[in-house]
Structure formats: C-alpha cells, structure tokens
Image (spheres, rainbow, N blue to C red):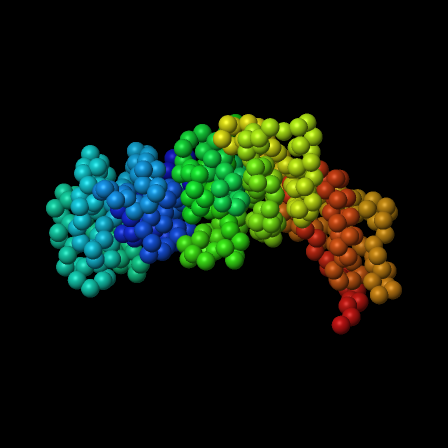
Amino acid sequence: MASRNLRKIVIVGRPNVGKSTLFNRLAGKRRALIHDLPGMTRDRLSDIVELDDGRRFELTDTGGLEYGDSPMSAYADEIRAQARVALREADFILFVVDGAAGLLPEDREIAQDLRADAARTVLLVNKVDRKDAEEATHEFWELGFERLMPISAEHGDGMDELFDVISEVIPADSIEDEEDENAPIRVAIIGRPNVGKSSLLNRLTNEERAVVSPISGTTRDAIDIEIERNGKRYLIIDTAGIRRKGKTTDEAEKLAVISARKAIERAEIALVLIDATEGITGQDATVAGYAEDAGKAALLLVNKWDVDEHAQDDAKKFEEHVRFRLKFLAYAPLEFISAKTGRRVDKIFDRIDEIVAGHRQRFRTSELNQVLERAIAGHQPPALRGRPRRFYYATQLKSGPPTIALFSNMDEPLHFSYRRYLENQFREALGLIGTPIHFVLRARKGMKRERRD
C-alpha cells in the first residue's frame, strides 16, 4: 500500500531468511505467507504500520533477491526486478540475513548491491535464537555495514530496539487523521488462477507492480497499492488465485486461499474476473461466492474478450450465461474488458465510484419507510402458519453494505421470494447498483413475539 507523505521502509534479503516473518512481526498481523519453501513471497507486499505515538510508515516485503547460477524459482528475474524497484523507492532498508545459516555468497552479492545505500541500511541478523547462531553474528560485520542488529523475527527478540531505529527516520507529520473523509476505496481483484488479475492490477496502476506470468498461481500473497485518480484515492488489493478446496493439496496454495479470503474481507468492493476464453466455471462461482458471503459490493469483469472473434450477439449470450451461473450476484454490473490491451479498463473506476457510493450510503428512516409502504401495497407479505405478517417500520442499521432492520409482528425469516422482492424494490427506489442489501427482521419492542418452536 502506498500512501501520501509516508516514509517507505523495505525489507530485502535472499530467499528464506525470514523476511515475511519479520514483515508480519513489524506489521502486527499475519499478512505475508510464511512457509519453509524458498521464494514464497513473489511480489512486493506492503502495509501501513503505526508506531505507538501514531506516526506511520509504509513497510514493504520483497521477494527474495536470487543470485547465483541456479535460481530457486522460475520467477527469479521478475522477483529481482520487483525488489530493485522497491529499493529505488525506499527511504530506509532492512537487509535480513540468516544467522543460523551463516554468511553465504548470495549475502555478499546483495550487500554489494546495497553498498551505495549503506547510510540508509541496517543489517539484521535473524534467527539468533537458534543454536550457535548468536555466536556467528560477528562474521556478518565483514559485509561492511555500520549498523548491525541481532534479532529473532519469529520470537520477537530485538524488536523493541529495531522499532527505536525505525522511529528515528519517521517524521512527526506522518500521523493521519482517523476521520479522513478522503479514505481510499478498498478494491480487491479476485478470481481463479490465471484469469489476468495481475495484468489488471498493472493496467489500473499504470506500472509493472505485480509479477505477470502465463503460469497459473504466480501471485500467492495479497498485494496492496494505493493510487490517486481525479482526486480520489483507491487501495487496490491483488489476491492470489483461489482454487477449489479439493485442488489445494499444496500447503502454500492453502495459505494463498486464506490470504485471498482475508483480502476480500478487507475490501469494500470485489472485482470478479472471469476468463472469456474458458467461459464461466464452477470455480468462478466459488470465488464470486466468497465476495457475496462477505457482504461485499461486486463488479463482474469478463477479461480477454479481445482474444477471439465474436458475433454481434455473443456478448449478450455470454452475459446471460454468467447471470444464470451467478444468480446470487444478480446485483453486480458486468463489463467486458481486456486487461492486456486496456480495452474498456478506463470504465472500471467510474463503475467502482458508482457502486461504492451506494455501498457506503446512509438513508433517512422516512425515505426507507416510504419504500417499504409502497412495496407492501404492491405485494403483501405471505402469511406464516396462517398468521399474517405485518411490517411497522424500517430503519438502516449500518452501511457497507446497506443493512436495513424491518420491524414486524414476528421475527421469523422471510420467504426467499419475498425477500428478493423487497430487495429489488429497495434497490430500484434507492438507486443502489452493485451492492448487496441485507435485511434484519426484528419483532417490535413491547409486542408479544409470535415465534413458535
């Protein structure tokens, strides 16, 4: 996540030295995926960290800088490029080495790359809690950095001292008002693997931020990047491709699903990507269902529409098929795009603004009651076990999504068809697009509740 007027602190080092563990320790949350496999972090992963006094900085975890003749992954060049972009933007660098493994040739090569930035670099010897690691710390002095600190990112040893060092470079004006009315719109890009999420992220942000590869599953972590467009701020969250539960036998993929679902929880709106060349699948429905389950606004994006030739009514037929398979997202608009060429991508921000405005909206009680009265006049609610259901009034409990309490003579759930009728009535009257509407049934206070076991 990038943000205005914030110092940028970047964590670098060869693969598997504990960068992601350190990132999670400093950020105070389990954002980066942790696993013994080298190269788990393939993209830049950023978060805003707040110190005790309210000062804030942007912390970035990079993919491991891979050196030598045998790179540890098929993405070595891309990962190295991502890390070097982060370094160019950094105000302060945390260079992590593995104290338990000792000084390796790759550490020396990275140190050589950082030589020009030595004044803004601190060398962190990690895993000093392991046997004999603390005694081996002295050998890292030969890398030539004036500041060296032994730490254990896993157990928190040395973290207080590290925060003291970090606080020295964080200015007092990095405190942000919690009531900022210009808070960014949080947008998650979701979809099954290889539908073009990273390509869309790069297109939306106009930079090669995510590693793009035709190999499915390239992105495992969720990546945040904040951008400003026409005076509005957007926090774009790219997520790992979500596979079906039965397909996630690899531990790293299971962690990626957890990361993606957490990213959806943090977002206000989900951009649900569908591959036009493969059509709508059960896996697409599963991914879209995560957004619907979380109560998020949604925009359906059919990507790669430019790959094949299409007849005049192909788009209409494709949308009908999508609507049939994703009935639960009937409220979500649909756009045909090409993330690769940029076709119709410019329309996405206008759609996001329109959808999120309704998602965040709060409505007057009088306005909601007028809608409810018209809806009841047009179609009376079905009786329950021979007892007529009556509605007395409606009021909004919260926004994001709009959640409306319906006070009634009974609080038993509405029949799904009548709930859908009410949702359509409120949606049309309130001009809500792309956001779910939640209803909460409440028995009016002071009345005998008519619940039966």
